[in-house]
Amino acid sequence: MKKTDVVIDIVIPWVDGEDSRWQEEHDRYASTSREDDHVSRYRRWDAFRYWFRMLEANAPWVRTIHFVTWGHVPKWLNTNHPKLHIVNHRDFIPERFLPTFSSHTIELNMHRIPGLADHFIYFNDDVYLTKKTSPEDFFHCGSPRDTAVMGIIKNDAVENFMPYIMLNMMAIINEKFSKKEVVGKHFLKWFHPRYGKYLLNNAYLLPWGCFTGIRNFHTGVPFEKTTLEEVWREIPDILEATSLRKFRSREDVNQYIFRYWRLMRGQFIPAKPNSDYVTIGKADIGTIERLLKANTILCINDDPGDFDARLENQKLEELFRKYYPDQCSFEIEDSEI
Image (cartoon, rainbow, N blue to C red; front, side, top):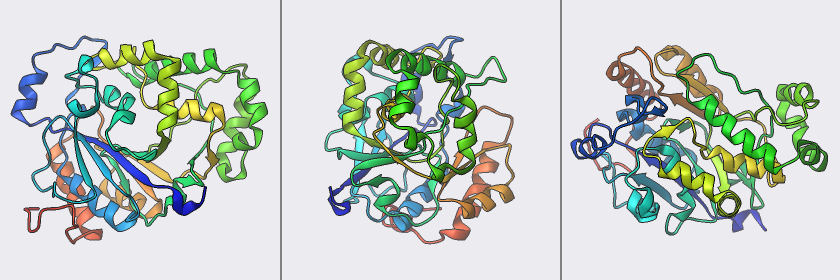
């Protein structure tokens, strides 16, 4: 496959937790202590318009952006843009899973989006593309670029949900794959010089008999639809159980299961990590600005915490406007900033 033969789309979900219609439907369902229904999971960040400005400036080669939504869109979004496909949950998520307030349900079913290219990149709405890129940064001759780094699942608070979800997925991976066989068959993909200091992770954890975890990088994740389809064939009951839950749960798996599966198969091209990560309320704006200029992708994560969301949003908008002051074609002309 030639480089120019690869058509690449983007999938990005978005939710407006301030929408009264969405709130009304959300409030019909009650979450439990084992589910994650925190306001940060649905918080609307007006700085999100800069995600489109950065994408247009830094990835003009993208064919289509599949904008996944409960039914609302940002007031400033140009919904008539030829590269934009507004996708309602009802358009691709099986009816038995709806309504859903879980990003995991959306992620596990995204290969069903009508018209989605065979090669696509999954973005969260807090993951910003900060430097110019080419298709080769995400796919090489049709194969996703990725970084195969082992890790350890850790937890520093009982209320954290993600470590439980990571453990669920490691159990599946270790049941389905032999670490010895995976690393032996694809040794140069697990010990590639592009990983730099992360090679130490793999060297240290290699003696363990099973995978203790996989290092996750908060970035735009390249996928092939065939991977998602294969995992659905192999573990349909697990994916179905997650999709049936209305809220994120400790019993879930998420989109990382597709990435882990691909790593086990060796269906990727080794790549140097290209992203940074900060949490709103913990990182000051100076740190965010430094990281905005340092790498290709920056995740500015919204997690439960004690901070003024409106103030932090204002700071982010002021920072982004400094580097991306002009409206892009994905915005309604002269829409209020």
